[in-house]
Length: 260
Ligand code: ADP
Ligand code: MG
Image (tube, rainbow, N blue to C red):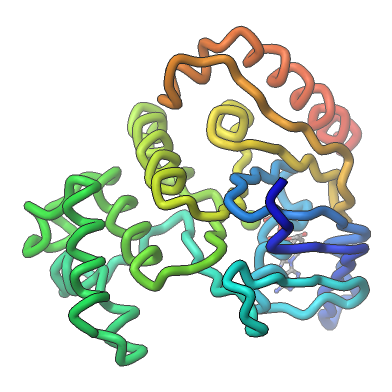
């Protein structure tokens, strides 16, 4: 078993505003193992983005501890890379200059890193488009470019906050398959937030189900699908798929029906 890259223990977080306190997370504990693809599902507004912000160290937890184990053994924090619903590509820069933006900002445009950016573009079908501008790409290609921009920085953990929710259903299926494959190929540890249960089942190794706000972990479900390959279609037609779906649906619909 790989050692955990992240260990969250009893994390709590509240927002404070003039109108009072908004408790977002009440008690979150789970581990993320190196190389694992973890999905987090939960009702809208339950604190999922807050949780990712804590993992990215953009917010400090109010209570609880979070232990980071750098896979390289170094004492510094593992590097996190973020991918959001909107790709935030800069329209005036070419695809190549978008994917190398992080390198440019951090003064790391070494020949090795540039070669790595080019390799990622070639491996994932974007090399031909490297001198085009984002507006000339399809929605799926834009998301791939956004992921490559993140991967170029060689993060240890990828944090994905509903990265496919702006895409139409058809595109979403194929892009989530592509992105899942890239993450597996590059052996990245990933934490994916999604409200799409099918997407969580077909992409992840394990799913954390959060309660409604303030969130706690209601259940963890390890996913094992018998499938020919890891395309979204094979995953969705695996014999175990429906059972997982029903299980997740039951857990989540309980919270949603209680909100009415
Ligand atoms: P999710 O991503 O699950 O939809 P969030 O983590 O974005 O949920 O938000 C959890 C709760 O915290 C929501 O009720 C939201 O309104 C509240 N919230 C989020 N950000 C802030 C903020 N900056 N100030 C006050 N309340 C916030
Ligand atoms: Mg959110």
